[in-house]
Image (cartoon, rainbow, N blue to C red; front, top):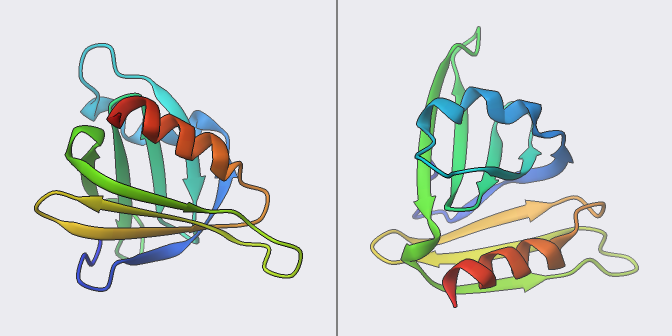
Length: 123
């Protein structure tokens, strides 16, 4: 599970949506994958209903912790784009009852699209 007290997560880079195959068993009716981002072993799946964080555990990586963060529980979010020297972008999301979760993305991420996605489901 994400350490909500720490509030940060590993740097993520865009990967193809095939990585979401590991979480589709958790999907509800009408839920679809929007985008997938991977760190070293862990990954995050953005759907049209929620953000699912997958914490891969153990030596073999067969044990996984799935944290579901529904858009309906987002109170505030912040998007920080990459710059000339700072190539990383950030997304801070404040969830009711859970607090702040911070996602850091590599410079190739379309952070504006992620912000637009979250806004379309929360506003």
